[in-house]
Length: 218
Ligand SMILES: O=C(O)CCC(=O)C(=O)O
Ligand SMILES: [Fe+2]
Image (cartoon, rainbow, N blue to C red; front, side):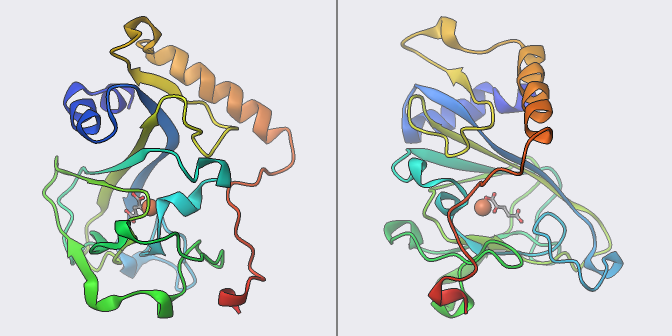
């Protein structure tokens, strides 16, 4: 995972979008989406079934509202319309932050989505999709009998808040101070292990700002 997160070609692409001072944002997921047919009918978690429409800026704390960030969605298996590829609302990155509701997934109420601008983005294994934190996106359910596997990683400009201050970030690339780059995967592992110990011994932490009581969620 560390090799992937610090991959030169990936960071080169990220650099074209946010510049050379790049922090590995700690909001990172492995999504191994099983066939819908084998899921419990009540399953509604995003990592297992379709992902509701949302903006990645909304899944962070308000402190990161101005953070220059990019999401890199990487296909491990071919991602197709049938197996639950990513989909986006075209042009939505030019819009505003939309209201999000936390139940059951954190998502934008369906009636606020411009469905006529929504398109699926199938990609081949080994390909990636890079998108803006305001891009409205989600994913389809996996209607095939195979697993759909992807990673989603995020990077932000070093010094901008990550939006998850309780999780560890690290400098993945710096042209200004190359010695500040983390190169030891074991150090990354230790940072996460310490975080897990600290968080699991305390009350759950708040990771976003949205309340189920807000008007659009009624
Ligand atoms: O792959 C998915 O189901 C959703 C991915 C996503 O929301 C993201 O990469 O930010
Ligand atoms: Fe997302």
